[in-house]
Amino acid sequence: MTTITMDLSNTRSRDLQLPPDAVVPPKIDARGVNFFYGTAHVLHDINLSIPEKQVTALIGPSGCGKSTFLRSLNRMNDIIPGARAEGVIEIDGRNVNDPGVDVVQLRRRVGMVFQKSNPFPKSIYENVAYGLRIGGLHHRASMDEIVEKSLRRAALWEEVKDRLGASASALSGGQQQRLCIARALAVNPEILLMDEPASALDPIATQKIEELIYELKDNYTIVIVTHNMQQAARVSDRTAFFMLGRLVEYSETKTIFMNPREQMTEDYVTGRFG
Image (tube, rainbow, N blue to C red):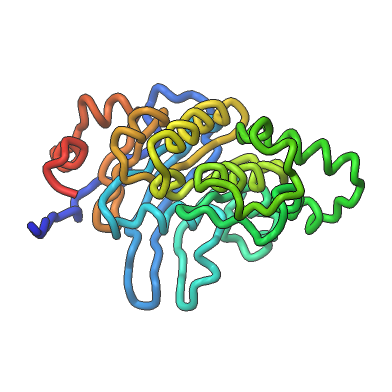
């Protein structure tokens, strides 16, 4: 296996902001973000503005920092001992790293879907209703309505409506992942983070997840980590390329794949390394 050694020290952070054709304020605005696992410096001066109600893909080889950055957006990294963030990550102008931020409320606003589907050992209904109950909703009719709405938004309702009391573990892998998406949507987030949501799925299930992502962006801001270049090209409006903990290039997806500014980006998206 060939080892790629690259010097990213001269990457100019000021060139990595939202492209000038975007006129609306960003939903997410990261400035000068550094991240450490103990003494390991894994993110270096990340500057990235993410627009509302679009799909932004984070691409790059394994270990490049894209998942660490994704988890920084709703402070999922807080649960890792020794993890430490520097810099500013604003959502609607509020820094998520401020001491006064309610992390539980933040994670309601910024939902997450993981690489491996992780349904709870409960019924299909109770999986979707879980966050609602934790949030204090106990009115059955209201809960029924939200569960159905969430399953419809996750394109799963027609497949499970007659067996809501069945165990979630009886669903196929693709159905379980869509159930996890429904569970995230039930608490009415504004942002949905997806970390390799289709990497463990077969092509048919992957297609359903991609179609769902395309539909959801009408109502949600979506940030997706993917190793699949074709998937990034199909589902995203903008793409950010990470390498060795640095943001190399960020632009509209068609630009990243057809006319990238950086040679390193071209080498990666064309499969010369990674």
